[in-house]
Length: 162
Image (cartoon, rainbow, N blue to C red; front, side, top):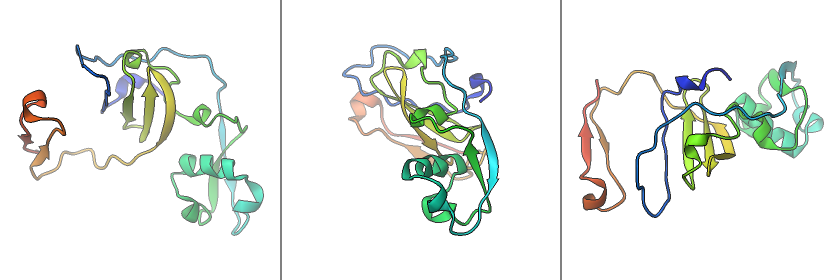
């Protein structure tokens, strides 16, 4: 899906007992996997449940960025040329990301592709579409707080948007 060095936002959720150091994002190590290719197919009204299995419909929801109730309203669908059983094969994110291997859990948001990836010890376990909003920062103040105690995570901070 292109150069992953262009990842604009990376949110990392680490659920370890202690952080013990800083986490630095690195480019992913390529992993040999079947390359899934796609094509656009016309879709007639009412034919969606006749043509695709429930598992295929779940993949089509992610690929076309529409829920099942809205998928049938499309006139064209993005459809894979082959249907691997592993849903992770359709992800534009790498199957393994070395910088996350030391963390039990990590979340990656790839803004250019508008997808997230959930990793466990550096291995992709779930992915899906996201909507991250506009590129420009908000005009109102943005508040961020920690769920932990203020002593452990620092006091809540206030950041002024541009």
